Length: 106
Image 1 (cartoon, rainbow, N blue to C red):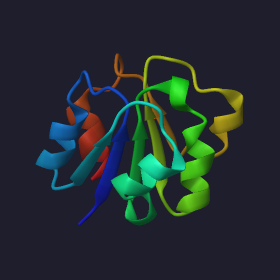
Image 2 (tube, rainbow, N blue to C red):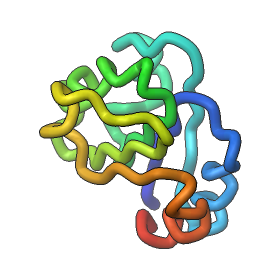
Image 3 (spheres, one colour):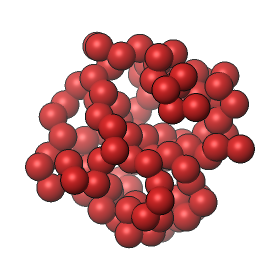
Image 4 (tube, helix red, strand yellow):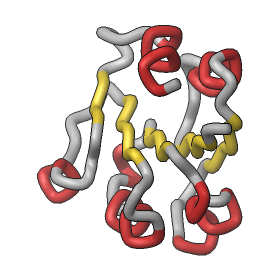
């Protein structure tokens, strides 16, 4: 089963859409540290979905812990330059609805 971690607020309810596609979802909010990501299961996750780009510094941490994880940014904000090379997919919620995103990630 595919495992995903959604980090940040989920106003569009992407977690529910991913679960509908059969993806096991863990949620993390607040400051993202190596410890909180570890507790959420980042070492075994297939997807890391970041919705709060104030926490973009977590992307290198995630990739260091789990080089095979797909990093997905789902946010209205612009992705910082330092994180672009480690992000697999970036989508704006205004352009891509949660059902389309969940189907693509499943």
